Image (cartoon, rainbow, N blue to C red; front, side):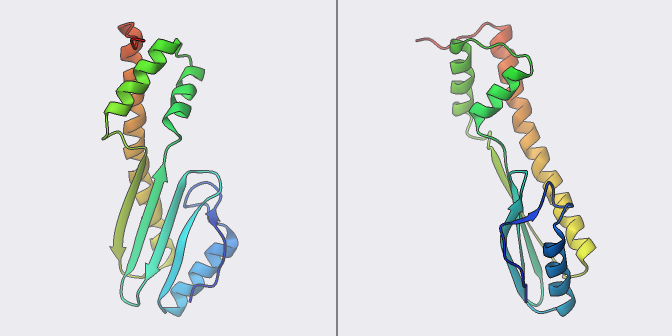
Length: 157
């Protein structure tokens, strides 16, 4: 049985678990009975995970998101990019036309129930995979902004 209630299991990343969540998960692992954590997240990051043990296998699911695209463009502008309104609209239109540029990712892994450290290692590894996917998308956004600026491309009114 998993005896914990709450929304946030960790402060920053999955390797930064709150003590009460870690205790509850360690106890559930030691008991060896089926358990389900439900979806729990991070207090500071747009990421969450779900652990479900059926008595035989443990299913680990992770979910990570990026900020809204408008926030990302604004962040880039704060970092030194100077977009006028027409250029901003051009970047936004290019972004909207690229459906493969997802701002969230999901990951699923099924393993044997072993130790807390092994589960934590899997969570951290999966979060890294999620981060790589989202970093690629953010890099594509930066390349788009650079292209718009270099070519002085503007959205027509």
